[in-house]
Image (cartoon, rainbow, N blue to C red; front, side, top):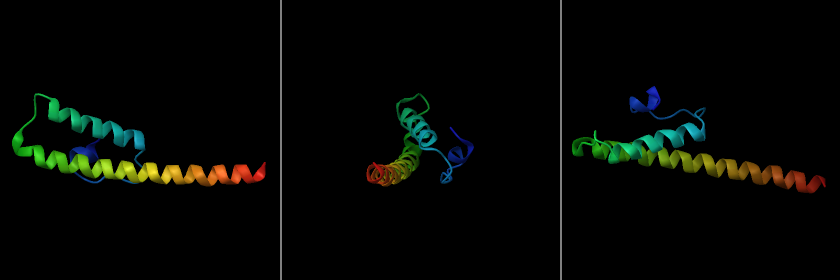
Length: 77
């Protein structure tokens, strides 16, 4: 997991979707792992939820960018 994520800070815009997905996967794995502690579960859940929202926004932006490129490509043919 990245140092920024370990510190509980928000991921930067230049973090790739793949890196965010990896961090989210690690957070989900924490809930199933031996280091799970109920006392910290809420904070981890909130962190995972925020990261999932960022990923969703990133994917929506990528989808829109692809639509724009496709529209330009289709108009050139």
